[in-house]
Length: 455
Ligand code: UGA
Image (cartoon, rainbow, N blue to C red; front, side):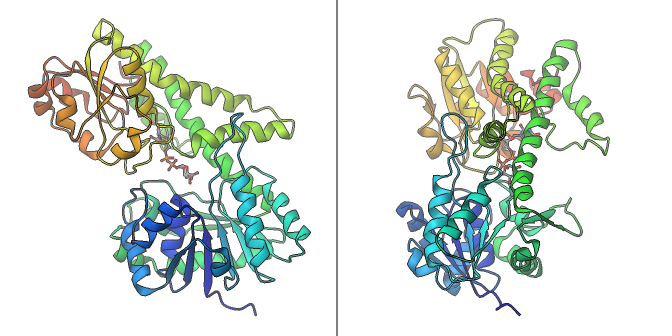
């Protein structure tokens, strides 16, 4: 019988690592959150995360108080006593679009030197297919018998805790497959502790959860390819919806009506068919380009994913062009509000945010841009052009605007009072970059409406 798991190290305190560490440390395990960035480590030590994610801070705080979560920057302190080591380090992209695996290999070799024989090394970072094989080779060269398990993560920013408590599926890939049992046992523990974790985090069970999650055991290479394929397919659905939106707008149809009916076919599904300003964030853009490059390494051309990227990049410019058509003149010199800067609602993350691209493009075209986001102002500041005014409320951004771009579908924008907008600025065009407003409500308030693919 293998020893029961008592101690775990999670390397990397980003979106995935910190969520994993916070959950497991509230399930009876001693968890080291290993983070080498001093500022991020400091924030975790104070019982918080360095990014906004609902429900995460109370979990961190509770585990710190109980002494079950130990933030550290020391491999020597964390690794030797751990039976499981999760690698959750960043995999940014290189200039040519390929995945930069420096942090992945660094974390693996530093941990390998200190792991006891039989320790499970679990890869959660998104890596190109074939990476695990290379890491295992490094373990062998270091003379270590360690099991390597690929356990890709499917949580979304903004709903990370709910996704992690009520998951649809867990994928574990290892050769031999039996090595993955230890990882499965950790997720079973999370399932057992759902009520407690939900209570501490304040995150309630969403309506559409799967009754019985699937545990899928595969080879290591398949698991790696599952993760990037899932993200690539979701990106493809979005770009497909955006291509149809362009046609719908031109042909006098409504893309929402089209996608509602297309998605009602169970073989297709409605999710991720929302047309709008295109996908951004730390995952889809780099995972799609990473897939294209890694396929090239195997002599395979991913034409379809090139098209997905092309459609996605076109969306901010397409929307601005359509807005100018609707206004009947150039936006140069006009007061324009951009509401929403994060790459999606529920997060402060602005990486590759199309909302930021929209704001910067408008400013570049000579508009006087005022921008506001409820959570991402600090993060957005660095990426926004210096000629963009940063506002502390939507009212401040909206006042006397010729045009208001709703670029991220935060609830406060979806539910914004149109009457109030009409008072703050007259004859305004509302550009609904996320198709998240009711056109009739906007028009009834005396404002003009433009959606994406809504004639
Ligand atoms: C994505 C995946 O959804 C997760 O399953 C995965 O674990 C994660 O990447 C990752 O690899 O770590 P995330 O990037 O947090 O999650 O956000 P999503 O909810 O997938 O949204 C991505 C982008 O697509 C956002 O900019 C969003 O606004 C956009 N989107 C999404 C659309 O434009 N239309 C849609 O219908 C859905």
